[in-house]
Image 1 (cartoon, one colour):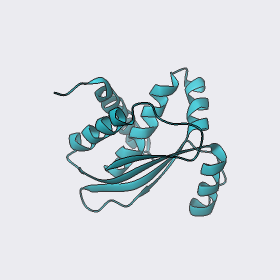
Image 2 (cartoon, rainbow, N blue to C red):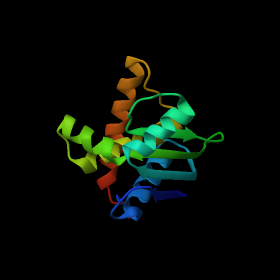
Image 3 (cartoon, rainbow, N blue to C red):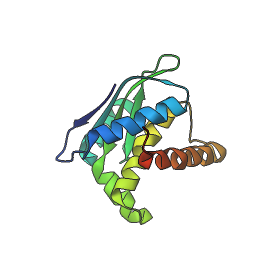
Image 4 (cartoon, rainbow, N blue to C red):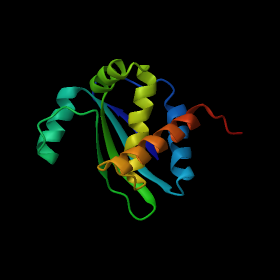
Length: 140
């Protein structure tokens, strides 16, 4: 089950549409959906998590904690809405597009994709693009 939680004023419009899309992404990677929590917050909230759990003193747009078991995906994905908004401006893309990219990025990590090397990062970007195109696809 995919759930959305809010630690800031932000809230997703049409949560069901996002949950349906993310479920399809999971299925397209031959994985099973477990408990996945998206927590939308601000920079300060995410910085505190970054410092406390990862010993990093930097701002970031996403931190994901993966509790997956085998092919069943479980985890908590924290997203700084402030950082996503700033990145959208920096990359000259709409906020909603950047938000979807970050949301699917966390899920792709659970599917086994990495982004530490150049090759891994290129594959991650390709997968993000592929999965973002699924957002508008209507399945009957």
